[in-house]
Amino acid sequence: MRSDGSTKRRTKAESYPSYSNPSKTKRYHEIEYEKEKYREEARLAKNHVELTETALKNAEEKLKEYQKNIKKLENDLHTYELLKHRSQAAVVGLQKVARESQDNVIHLETRLR
Image (cartoon, rainbow, N blue to C red; front, top):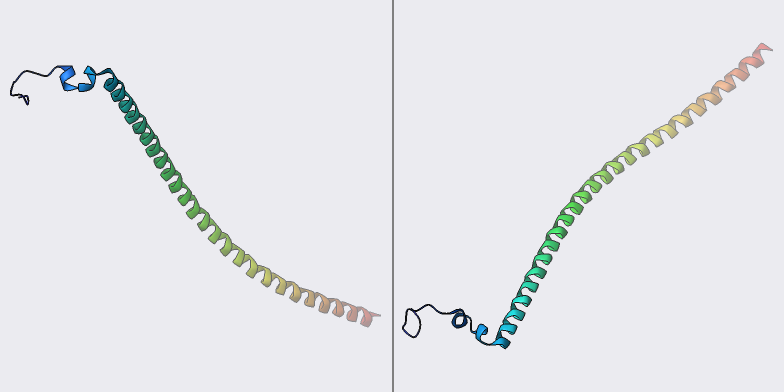
């Protein structure tokens, strides 16, 4: 039922007052255009946020992977440092044995003469 008490259906002009006034029609279309423009901007912004969140997630996963690799490399470096010190000690010991052996050879050669 209409506000005037009748049950007659409204015409398009009655339903949308802007159809009866060209300046209001123009303004209505401008507002609709602006509304659609803002909707599109919002959709693009939402898409950009989703892409950024995906990129952030991927970057965080890569960071964890890199941190894990760095930790492994640090452990390997520590192991190699220990091996280096052991090798240096072994070289010093072998050099001492080589000198002693050379001294023994010289001593034996001297005895043979």
